[in-house]
Amino acid sequence: EPEVTQTPSHQVTQMGQEVILRCVPISNHLYFYWYRQILGQKVEFLVSFYNNEISEKSEIFDDQFSVERPDGSNFTLKIRSTKLEDSAMYFCASSEMVAGVGTDTQYFGPGTRLTVL
Amino acid sequence: GESVGLHLPTLSVQEGDNSIINCAYSNSASDYFIWYKQESGKGPQFIIDIRSNMDKRQGQRVTVLLNKTVKHLSLQIAATQPGDSAVYFCAETGANSKLTFGKGITLSVRP
Image (tube, rainbow over all chains, first blue to last red; front, side, top):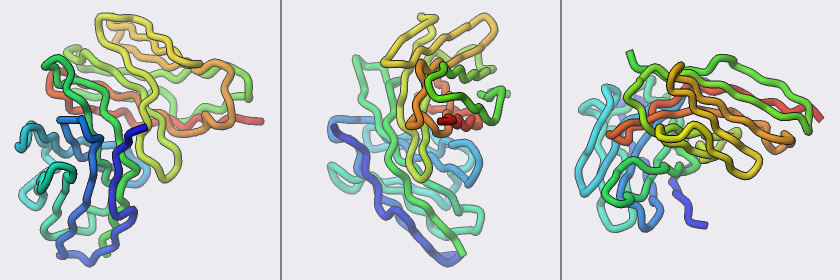
């Protein structure tokens, strides 16, 4: 069964450093998403991406964040200068656009645990 | 403001019993609702979904009920098994595909 994959599973970084989190969405999916989950809290939307551009972003997704689809399979989230409060699980998700309607089941990857020291 | 929330933080059930997990949402414009299950150290796993033009949908051992009048969503799990132990999230979305998650409820199955 196709699934979303993410690497690395755990990333430890120093405050102020740049990190890139990587995702491989399900191959025939056209919508891509990043969410984060701070320990013990609910999952929060960061950004959605379609047709090589951001569709929507939350207020969490400030200028320190960026997303990219560098090739036909990868989808990345970059944090330019990490802060302590960026420590969280980051989940990538993807969905298949069906009949021109973007609202569709989102399938999540296993997540990357980011720890900022 | 817009929010999706869960009524209870934890639910403990006896193996073999039925479980009912409830969720309230406040955005009347939401038209698509999903239940996810999250096991420790893993990402949210899709369980079942329902669109706003329906009030009930059944899957394998799971049923989702939607009451748009009171903005209430529930997940029923029949014959709960130890493998059902996890955190359950309801989520909603409208035309923009952005999922808004509830806080999560822990389901604990007693042997």
